[in-house]
Image (cartoon, rainbow, N blue to C red):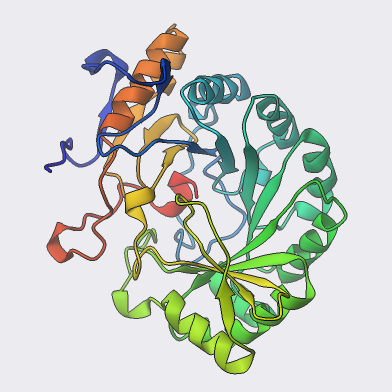
Length: 357
């Protein structure tokens, strides 16, 4: 099947849309792409700013931040979320940049938590969690992912280009006081010649703390464009290191749309996940769309196209108009990311920090 794509860097205004009739399931309007995948997961970036400069995500200096008036307001985020939920979205994740830098974040969590979603979660670098864990829990946050690539201070500075390991670990400890936020997932970006020496320590952390450790293969979303396939440390290689030093792991059942291959140790203590978008792509069951901080909808991390929602939101669009834009965007969702297809692969039109995780 041939994908219909716009030229690179194309931003699609609402006025230019030729809107297809929305798909319906059992009489209800639903977001279903042209490959039959039902979209149930919306990732919303609330800011492009970050207090770290991780090497796989953004350059150390020279970032051009979005102007404040271009970023969606809480009212606008809540409205898009509500329309998406009415179209079948069941999970909402707030991301960045670093979302805890957005003033009033617990208020936004409280507003979105009122929607009938199965899961409301947050992806964060954890630096500010020691002070935010309680207000986020009280606001209704249910799940959290904390990015942490090393447990050593010098290597933390090497990867994040900022100090902060003690603050992140303290934030994780604080989260343990609020069991309503569960599970606590720790995301580790796996890079060859860096992560190998960290694997055992993270496995030990999974066995002594109530954290799900997840290793994520290094993807070509770095702002400097220096990604090389040779730097990818595969999930299977990491699993082999863990089983060599501990014991065999056994699979844990997961939903078909899950990005993570989940395992527990054979004695039942501790969970490890492997997210392998390079070595074992899961595009066939992808149910995710993403909204950038400036209101552009993306149907894949590696999209070169975006669908404008901010313009319609600020020019009087009705909820039906917004639903039509969402439906049209989803009808163009890519079949796969093509990382493994050589010349056919096109880098995303933004870096990871500008897209949202």
